[in-house]
Amino acid sequence: MSELENIALFDLDSTLCDYSKAMKKDYNLLKSPNDPEFQDFIDEENPYLKNRKRIIVNQPGWWKNLEPLKIGFDILNVAREIGFSIGILTKAPKHAPNAWTEKSIWVRKHVSDAQILTITQDKGLVYGKVLVDDWPAYIKRWIENRPRGLVIIPAQTWNKEFHHPNAIRYDGTNIEIIKKALEIAKNRNQREPLDLSNL
Image (tube, rainbow, N blue to C red):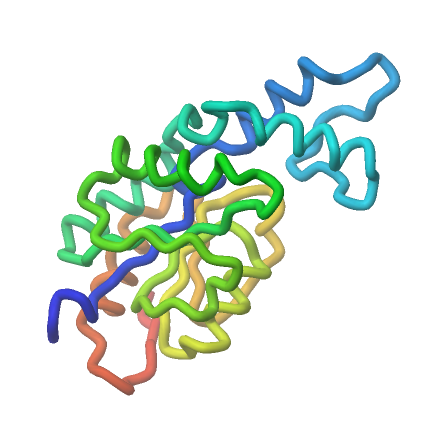
């Protein structure tokens, strides 16, 4: 099997980089005494909170200065060790054009061995044997088109209720299971179903 068929795709925000920590810090700088406390995801239905988020992510340097997230790099290092080609698969807000450039800068700095960098509005269109992503809606869309694909979910509060037979949640304590799942995915023959039943 060619090297490019063994692609592991990695999301950036809240997977490889600590989006939530930076958003919380900057939200709290703008927060008035009557504003709600920061939640993991700002209420997109609330116009003034949505606009504050836009102000935050449009700051020059905001995206390229996000801190690496250990939980995602644990998975990345195992994927490298097993021999996957590393790809980055991320979305960028339409209203934050700086995100497109700065995400690319971040990847060059922190994941310089990435052979693929895809910034898209639809993750379901991109091939990989493995997707590492924290956001359930993006996982569902990808797995619709990759029914034999493996998904590894870095544990976040917003994905604790998500379950799928092809998905394993990584919480920082089960790296050996993640390693076995990645080996199964890498060694799976074309058109062979993904079987995680022995994990």
